[in-house]
Image 1: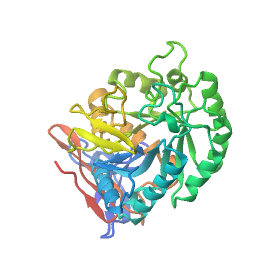
Image 2: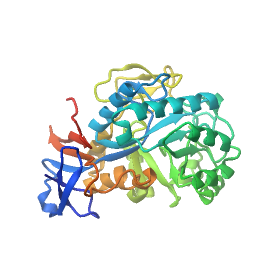
Image 3: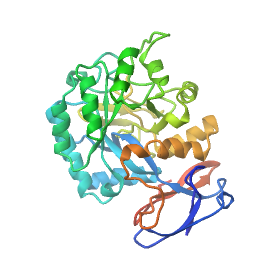
Image 4: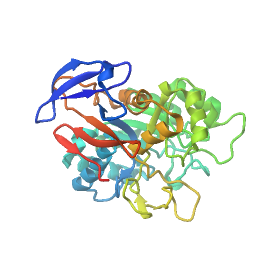
Length: 384
């Protein structure tokens, strides 16, 4: 049996788990039974934006079930038990083909059905302006298209759960209610939208900001800009990349204070270059060549543009503790409770009969690390 700490608003429980990885019994216990300075267990964490991991690009032609299991196992070893694979901007034909290939690989994999409830489509209805487009191919950005959304959903056995759009793109205000009706959360990102357009997108149903602080023009008006407009809107929950590269830790602290932790989600925005033991060098995101540098930054070669991150979820947890002295409660709020509604019941609180998707933590060299992760019948341990 093990004690599970799910946060200050959820009773701390002890549970028994059968050989199939399902919880067979539960009983409440005192929080004093959990030793946060030694070993403890939490429910698994959720990452709603992952483009690839551990050398595997989710955009790859011919992506296999074995490659997906490799990436998902490494994600699990970093504390993630639920993930939204993310596809970036491409032409309509290519994007549809990539989603079909990705969905097939996940369906045929071992861990995919246990870890993947659906997808995050980031583009192509984004801003092609300098700074906004980032690593996305600006040439493929286009006005909003309901038919493309329908075509994408038609080739996938899993739902699209998030679509990131730029409010200033033509047709987006009509698209947002269409997305909401189909259970797709609408996020604002890669945008230079005015305050008026951001407020109009929220009125239409947008509820999220994608990796806020990034995908913005390099030069911003000091009084009115798409960053401040989103930070100040209580109707938007914002995701943040906590790698110290995409947003400086001091700036990120300001963002957390403005947005509040109750409206914040942490994401890796990981690419194929992400992972603990990957070397500096060249990797891919779709047809775009990217380079991981010695300091962990991932850029389009020869340019200043960031191209996703190499960070892992457990490293972001350590960053939050080391930079801001955040508590386990704070981390569970941003890495589980806040994204949980987006995944539509795929993730539930520990209860009898459900798989025990748990992360077992311990302290090593004075810092918090994943000891092992349980996903149903599977136990996955990090390689140190």
